[in-house]
Length: 226
Image (tube, rainbow, N blue to C red; front, side):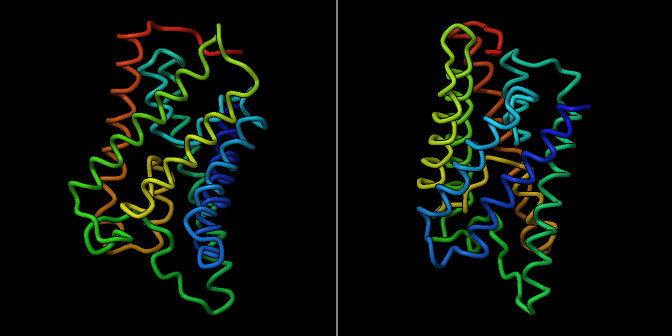
C-alpha cells in the first residue's frame, strides 16, 4: 500500500502547489510563476516519493507508463484512484481557504475551452494542445527514466518539461495534461467545468497511451530505472 499512499500525497502536493499558486497568487506571479509552481511540485515529489511509487501524480502518466511496459497493469487502477483522491483533497483545502475568508472560487483554475479558455481558444485548439503536450511529457518521462541512461537528475528534466508545457498551454486550456488535476477543480465549480471535463480526461489519457506505444515501437521496452 505504500506506493498508493505515496501517489495520494504526491498528487495532493501537485494540485495544492500548482492550482494553489494559480488561485491564490496568480495575479502576483503570472503565468511564469504558475508554470514554475507545477514544475516544482513534480520535481520535489519525484525526489521525495520517486523511489516508492515512481511519482506519477497523474493518471495519464500512469496509463502511458503502463502502455510503455514500465509498470504492472494491476497497479493502474489503484494508482489512478489514489491520484484522483489526493487531487480532490487538495482542491477541498483550497476551497476552504477561499470560502472561509468569504471569497468566491471564481473559475478555480479549471481547465476549459471556448468561452472558458483563458484566451478563448476553440475546442479543436484545446484538443490539439492537450494531445501534443501530454505526448511530449510522456516522451520526456519515458526517455529520462530508461534504466541504462537515467541519472539522479531525471526529476529535473521532468519538472522543467512540465514547466515548459504550462508556459505553452496556459493561455489555451489553463493546462491540464493531468485528468486528476482537472477532475479535482471541476467538481467544485460544477456547471460548465463538468460539461467540458471529458476533454481533459480523454485526450491526455489517449495521448499518453500513444506515447507509450510509440516509445515501445521506436526505442524498445526498458525497465524503469531503480
